[in-house]
Length: 99
Image 1: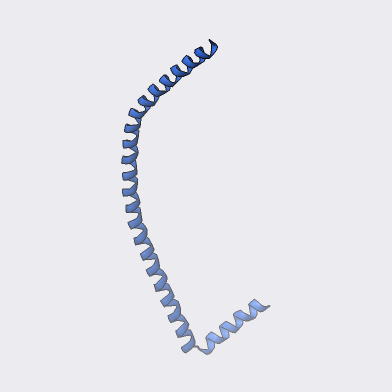
Image 2: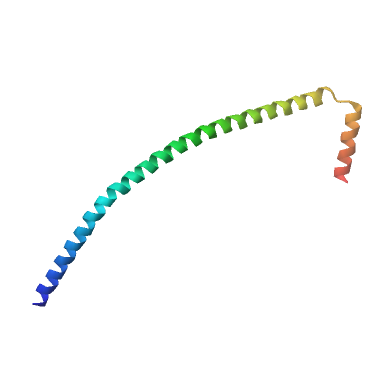
């Protein structure tokens, strides 16, 4: 007898669980739709951000290239046009750094 009572209580629980599951299933559809819409919006935003990032990285790369060209030009001019006053100034600064 005790076994039969537990069996019926288990069956009742299963039915309740099934009912809750069905109710959740209907809510899940709405939830999934919301999730899908949110995902689409996020993807759009990410694509926009990606374009901005590409633009920024391109600008940054151009700035770096420009700076490198300027630095190489400065080095070339320093090598070709090295005056005595420049040498004196460099030696003076080196002396300060060493001492």
